[in-house]
Image (cartoon, rainbow, N blue to C red; front, side):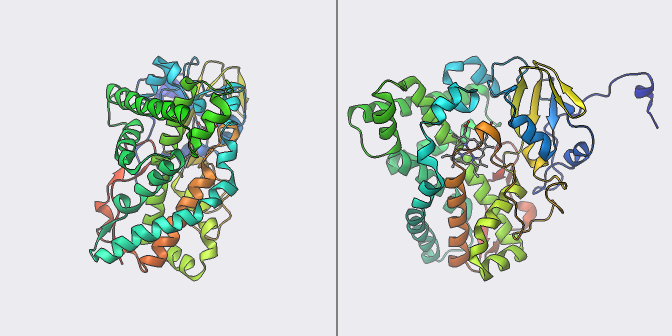
Length: 410
Ligand code: HEM
């Protein structure tokens, strides 16, 4: 039955996006309702603008794989997902290649591909095992319970890995962690975010200049030697590239590892399956990536030509938001999508995006998360929450959804 507004031919107001969660570990239920409808739905962002929201697995892949959609923030209609999205638009010279289209994007990305291959991530395993042994060994030896696995593990591990890649000393880790965290937190004002970005860029510029003067064996030195010196890459391009690696590789991995450890501490089926058979870990990590989909508000693009997406025409100059969490709960691809099943083959998940911008650091992230889970299973057998679930501090304001703390005992 049509309501009065529909009978008068009025368009219903597009619902606000992002929608609130009902359960902290599941995407907002409205997303499932939208997924059952048209290929894309109108939603209203915080600034009152209306954009398209795509919620199906097929739709998300179709848009992310289509060059008629741009990732350039200054393109007409580009969705401003947060107040701070405008910063990149206001200062396009600070944009890194995640906000570029090809050929600019692939020129810069290809300079990094060999450093982030699956086998290079594998090379990190022994280093990680030693690091994790030290960290968890220290926590166990201290004999104090409960311990917070966010402060004790999921923040320092990705941060040390990045510090190792960049050849940055331990003394600068707090600075890098702090500034990167501000860049992905909606709780800060655009001015605070701009200040954090400028401080980080100042630090990175100094780092690059020091490598120009005296190259070492780290990633930044390699880029200076192979790309900057022959004139293929400018220092002005290298600084945002380094910032992208720092920010993209940090909070995301921390969030995904924290939520994965939460699942381990609260889901006896998962803990049992992994304790019985550690070789299940890579599969379970893919499923945890699908299930938690920490890039909670999705990815933004704008159409540069009219595009027909099944029953919806997206016009040139219109913005589109791709909900990775909705796509990852699409029952047409993942039966019983709201169940975390470590035996499921979840490799088609969208947690790392799709298409030309698909996450460059995915192999590294997976190795880090596998090793963190393996170390906790070995060192903290029977790990469980030390506080009631309702008291956990879920980070709704951060673009990569996660936990402020994870107090556990064992
Ligand atoms: C669980 C952890 C991670 C998740 C869930 C994640 C997720 C994503 C997603 C969804 C994208 C696509 C963005 C878009 O299309 O607009 C992306 C891109 C990217 N990620 Fe990750 N990421 C993770 C870890 C990492 C790590 C560890 C690094 C590197 C140290 C990294 C570096 C990058 C880079 C450089 C891009 C841009 C790729 C491009 O534009 O070609 N990420 N990531």
